[in-house]
Amino acid sequence: MKVISEVARRTDDSKLTDWYFGIDRWLIIYIAIMIFIGVMATFFTGSANIIRTHGRMPWYHFFVNMLPFYILGIGTLFAASMLNKKWVIKISWLNVLVCLPLLVMTLFHASIINGSARWVSVAGQNLMPSDIMKPGFIIITAWFLTRMKKMYGEDIFTNRDAWKFNINSWWPYVIVFLMVLGILFKQPDIGTTILYFSVFAAMLFVAGLPKKWLAILGGVVVGGGICAFLFWHHVHERIMDFLFKPLDPTSQVGYAVNAIRQGGLFGMGEEAFAIERLPMAENDFVFAALVEEFGALVGCLLLWLFVKVIKHLISAAENARDKFVLYAITGATSLFAFQICLNLATTLHIMPPKGMTLPFISFGGSSFLGFCLLFGFILALIREDKWK
Image 1 (tube, one colour):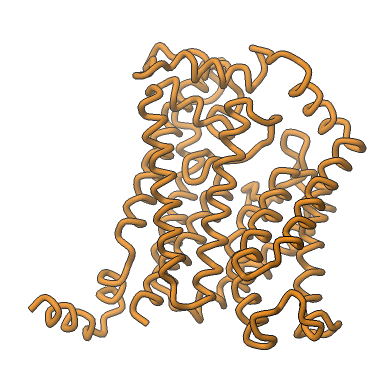
Image 2 (image 1 turned 30 degrees about the horizontal axis):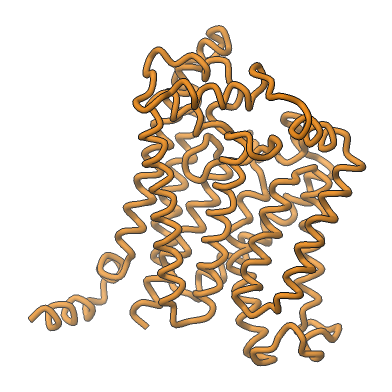
């Protein structure tokens, strides 16, 4: 009877019914919890911001600024999750074709924030093209790898025909990808450059990249880091301070570490004071603000939630029937995991300071929109692959 009932449900032609019975419910629940935590974080970091700005900004400042992005992002998440594979690819192309010129614009007409030219102003809002373009980058990379394997077989990395200079070879993709990395490096945005490169390497590895080639890519990352250390003063200064100077308790990271230490197991609640002195408590250091306010137990629960999402995505990738879906989920998982690691490593003083949002949690409209669109795509692909 259960099988008959399921078949009856699947014969309903309603788009909403098809979505309801095919969607990955656990992944939707995990995303909803992360969004809820992010909304709560905008409120209590906003309250601390009153003291930090001497009353210039009200306690609801961050929430009001994020509200349009919450509405648009959640709407985008559900709309994207109802698409089929064909439309996921089409919208990903549109995503890249819109964001790529905006990324180029950062070279000539950027909005400078905290000394970095990562933003452009669109309709009065500062947007970060590199954040919004992440979903398109991952889906188009997955599409490209699948297309290359259809044309040249499984050996797409050492096949000489795949490297001939023509429109159907590696070169169009590689040239555009290197251009994107060059712009990110120039902004400068070392963290996002590493993020894009790491996601790209993870997707290539799953697609069969030989280990010696992976080692070469690692060498490129190290080489880029050495160049940044030698030629950019702020990078050199941050690394030297991290390696050879004791942690300054009045620095951003110093306040963040102190906030985590003071939070204890159950948090300080209204008595929390480190986040009142912590710049970017709502953004790069939101994890420290959460732990001081609610305690290490809540911080550990948030980490457990992140791990559950990553494990769930890995399981979905292992069960994928379509290689395109496998590559897309690999890219999404890598981006989600790497970005969390970069954010927490900075917060916990494991690596030099690097501005990076915590997915779905940090204040930041571009990051929120990018992850909503990406996870909407992944939900759609899992749903379609499940019933193929």
